Image (cartoon, rainbow over all chains, first blue to last red; front, side, top):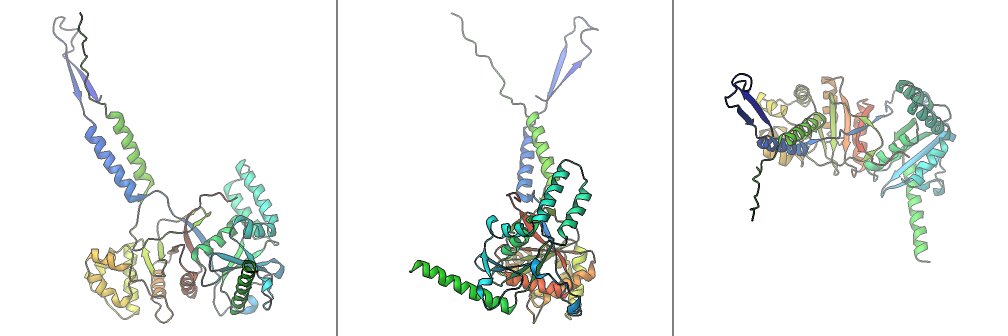
Length: 221
Length: 201
């Protein structure tokens, strides 16, 4: 118990016969605990522990003054276009699609076996290099600054793929974040969010119609 | 023969240790947590693996709810007042000092300018109730959202734009907001997400 023992009058040494007075001062901490518990409850209910995460993106400028020649051209072999559509579906094509053939647009998924494995396989060089760097960092061989610098360099290397994300109006914000997340996971440094064009939209519609017909044919042979 | 004596024990429990523990816990909560901001709409942000924390100051937060209503909040009250001043100047309106005073203490704002005067005249409880039915217009004919962002940027050049949207928000709304930002050459901004539990691999 919180108590203080005071030895009054110096007792033993001076007066052999005098009684020793012992006073104990009890402090009851129960109200203090009550108050603290109340305060803790208040803090637990009214505050949040986790700070929100953030994703930084740079959008291309849509300034008309930039001439078409000045715009960055993307090599056809390096370009992957992801088309995000309604109902959590995702399609992709590489290079330039054949707008008359809906088969150039391929169906994929947000699962690890879907779009992630595709992007990983296109970006194996950078992924393996970054894995080595991460190991080095774990072993404290390189500093944090060196690590980020080198990762940025690898990500923007020559043979890394360029991903263009095109979201249709029906897709949700979550789809967009998921797609951007895949860029982080697959260590893709060059990606851009673009508007979906009418030709792509028509292609997407054709593809969806074809998929519907296919599934219908399977169900009703 | 002998009586069994029941020893009288005091039932006092030592609360000192308990008190120590609670004080420690309290200190922990006070130091690590941040107060939840009052928002007019509940927004569940999508999860991502990104681990960058959002800075505390100089943030212009754009809140988008699932139906596509847009709200804004700024962390400095002085900036808010100056922004309101600029926006009202641009739209040819003026506010009395009393109205500015009420606007100053708003946590989130998102009322079309033509309803702003009526909104500020309401009682605080009524304001909270009614705010979620409004939202800043973002359509091309009356893009007040653009005006707000432009004026906020003019007020504070260090401002960082953060978009906080619900995971179910249709992309169309996000696109409108992003297009407005692009028109203003605000090409760098943050998307607020929550932390994904599963690991990257």
